[in-house]
Image 1 (tube, rainbow, N blue to C red):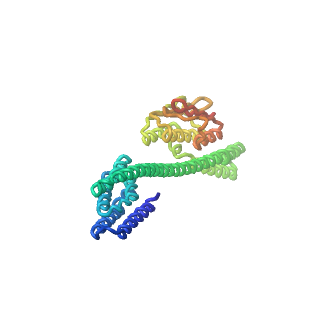
Image 2 (image 1 turned 45 degrees about the horizontal axis):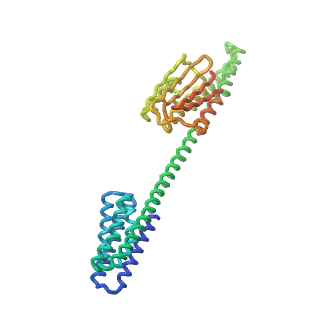
Image 3 (image 1 turned 90 degrees about the horizontal axis):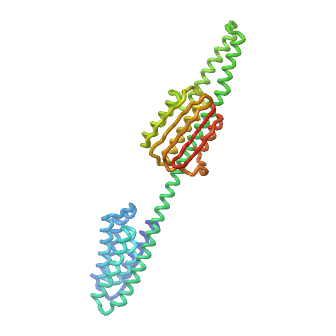
Length: 370
């Protein structure tokens, strides 16, 4: 039940009981006025103080005091006109909405004891039936209250779950977009490198082979034009490649990524480079750097690790990247996330492979011929 519907329900019960008090016979004007005043005060207390507390889900001392005030006003209304007992339908749910379940049950018992005590003072002989009614009312009130509490908890859990799903979906869309943009940039850089850059290089080589001295002015102009366009194509490749590789070597870029990861996640990381570092084709360096970024992102988001080790190993015919953490691991057959699948696709584009092992931590190994 939404808070607005609950407000309507509370006011309907209060107005109905007040109307019944006005119409019933056998009570003086003063007693009727006292009961109606108590009911009006309860309504005002709920709208002005109780409702904001319920909206904020503030289960605190103030909420308990509001419930005690409702209980006191409820007792005053019954003392003036016993017909006000019907207010219990509006009062009991308030307890479960504003205080803990244990306190609410105590307040429900107290609310049902009040009419019995007032009836005992007025007519001691009829206490038996009042006790039976009070017991039934207490049991029903507790059951309804527990149900209300469970519904509120389920509603809150459902709202939290929806919020988490929406946040997860937004994050996945952002990552997919970022990965898609990066993949397209890498593809374009590779295309430019494999076509335009190599084409201009071939033109320069062929022309110089035909006229090494470039005595023919037209051939010299062709070579200058080809060299200018080769420089432009290399600039495009650099612009489309990761910025981390534009101003640093691959080992330096990997160290920077690990250091940034440690700063952002407070997880210790070490980087080790073996073999003789050498310049690799741009597409290969891009794949290895993206693999480091993706692996460290997965560790930060999912692994719960305390330490990460990164190895960049140069061999005569290949280069190998290993990222290992001591986190919780995961089920490798179920690892079909966009990041890992994208890592495998990028590695395959340059003839490489990706191996994933997850047992007492996770190890991601990327090996590319070079």
